[in-house]
Image 1 (cartoon, rainbow, N blue to C red):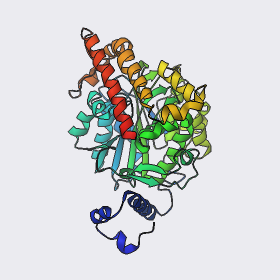
Image 2: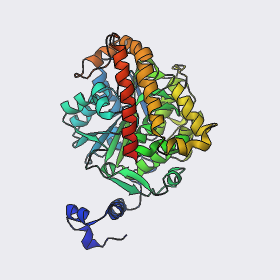
Image 3: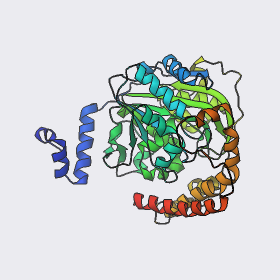
Image 4: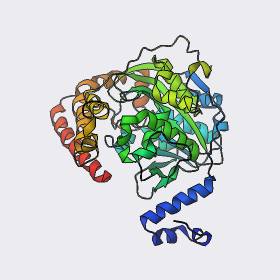
Length: 440
C-alpha cells in the first residue's frame, strides 16, 4: 500500500487509529525505507572491523577496566554519540548461574563509561523466550538494580507500546526469508539506534559457543524464533546482516569473569577466567571467544559464513588483538548436550525431523517448553546446579555479585526441596501454556 505525503504528515496517533493492522505494518515499513534510503547504516569497512580488545581484570578494578576496554576498542568511532543507545542484555536463565547471563558489573561498567562520555538516552532491552521469564531473570541476575540505579529506560520488547514491524532486508538472506515467508517482524524500537550487546563467554548446545552474534537472536526475532533452530548458524548470520542495516552503530562488551563450558547456555561447568573482551566486530569478538575456549573459530559454521560474507573477520590470523596476550590461552572447553537438547536435535536434524512441524508448530508445542523447563528448573538446578552456585558465591566474583541489589541468587538450604519441586513442576506447565497462547 502506498501512502501519499499528506497522509504521512498526519499526527501519528490519528493515523494509527485510522488503519487496520496490515495497513499500519505497511506504513511503518515504508517510512523505515524512506528514512534509511535503501542502504545499510553501517558501512562495509566499519571502524573497528577485525579488532578485538582483551583485558585481564579483577573485582576491585572491573568497572574502570570496562571503560578502558571500550576506549581501546574505539567504541566512540563505532557508536555515534548523537543517537540513542540500547544495551541488549542477555538473560539465558531466570535463575542466577555463573557465566549464564549479563553480569551486573558488566552493565554498570558500560553505562558508567557511556554516561561519562556524554551518551544520552540509554536504555536496556530484554526479550521474552518460551523458557525464560525476563521479568524474574532481570531481578535474580541483579541487572534491574543497576539499570534503575543509573536511570536507564528498561524495555521489555513484548510490552504494550513496542511495535513489531515487517522488514524486508536489503542483503540476500540465507534462510530467514524462507522460514518467515510472510515477512520478518522486527521491533520498531531498534531502528535508527546504536546497540551494545552484553554476552558472556560460554558454550552452547546448538552453536558450540554463543556470544555477540547470537545475542541478537532473542531481541530481533519474535517468539517463533525456535522455528529457526534447525538452521541456527545461518539465522544468526542473517540477523547480523539485518543489524548492520537498521542500527546506526554496533558494539559488544563480553564478560568472561566467569566462563562456562559443557552443555551451555545454562547447565554448564563454571570457571573463573577474569577476562573481558570488546569489539565493534561481532564476528571477530566471537572468534576470539571461541579461540580462548579452545575451538577453531573457522570450524564454527556461523563464524565462517559471516567471515565469507564480509560481515566481520572470523579468521584469528586476520584479527588484531589488543591488550592481554592470548597466545598461551587454551581453556579446553567442550560442547556437550543435555537430555533436553538431545531430544531437540533429534527433531531438528535426526529421526524426528519429519515430525518437526507437528511437534514444534502445532498445539502440541507446549510439551517442548515443558520438557526444557522441567529438565533445567525441576531436575538440574536443584540437584546439580545449586551446589555449583553455592560454591561460586564463595569466589571473588560471587562475592561481588552478592554486593549488588536484593535479587535472590540461590536457596541456601535444601530443606524445602520437595515442596519447591512441586511448585516448580506446576509452574513449568503453566509457563508452557502461557507461551503457546502468546504464540498463537
